Amino acid sequence: MITESLIAAERQQHREEVNQDLEKLLVPNPPPYAIGNGDVLSIVVWDHPELAGNALNTGSITPDPSGANSAPPGFVVDHQGRIQFPLIGMVSVEGQTEEQARALLTTKLAKYLANPNVTLRVQSYRSKRVYIDGEVKSPGLQAINDIPMTLVEAINRSGGLLPSADQSRIVLERGQQRYRINLRDLVQKGINPGLVMLAPGDVVRVHSRDESKVFVSGEVLTPKALTMHDGRLTLNEALGESGGISPLSGDARQVYVVRKTADKTRVFQLDARVAGSLAMAESFELQPKDIVYVAATPLANWNRNLSLLIPGALTSAVSATNRP
Image (cartoon, rainbow, N blue to C red; front, side, top):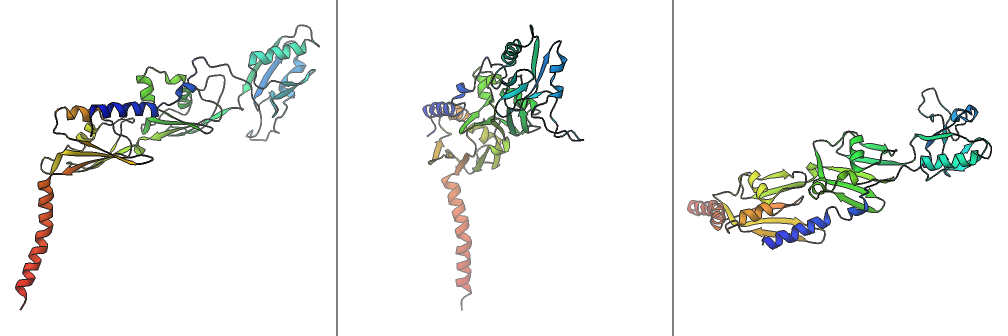
């Protein structure tokens, strides 16, 4: 039976399932960008133009006329996280920030140059990417650069959410871990979605609202499939959008919600004639693929059975009358 204690237990279980372990994803102060394999660095040693990287594009691809396979001029970080720089040879810069790499080069060049003035920046970010899929305007790969790649940043770079996007069903896959993010719940809890930090290799999928439907059948005026509103639809709203319980044939004592879970099928029942039942129906939140069924009254069932039996009885009677 749907009671206040059941509703409270369902809400608590829903909170635990949604936004589970999101503390691991929240990064209030993201660290600066770390150089990775494949990045292209622009390095300038002032007053020493002979050390410019335009002529020393290590690891570059031979350019073609279209420029599709060409790498920008600079120093490419190889697969071992190193660059080859004049005078000092191979230097490992993987995992370092721009400031750390600049200080390292300055220290090494000081052995050959007097007071070297070095400027270093990442010219092309090619080492770290995330993938955005689903209900966004431009799904695909997004490169991580010096701007922290938060969930909101990734969605904005993909053109934003489509009107069909379900903000309550955003799935983040990181290795073997799978996180379900509900933006509406995050905002209600006072958590800034901009703190959800993505990592290289993350896959973000924004599901469609059409995948979150509730089916209303039985003795209602308009049986139909209903689309949830960003993951939220109460039993009262489902009955209201279906025209309500049929006053002629619906049994208000037998309003059922059938829910298929991973291990079993659960059936909830609401007696809509009890005082306060409408308030409980408004507080009882449905889940995707729930089936709301309103049973018929005993009188309606009797009338239907009788209508099925009478044609058969009449046929038998007519047949018996026509026998010689």
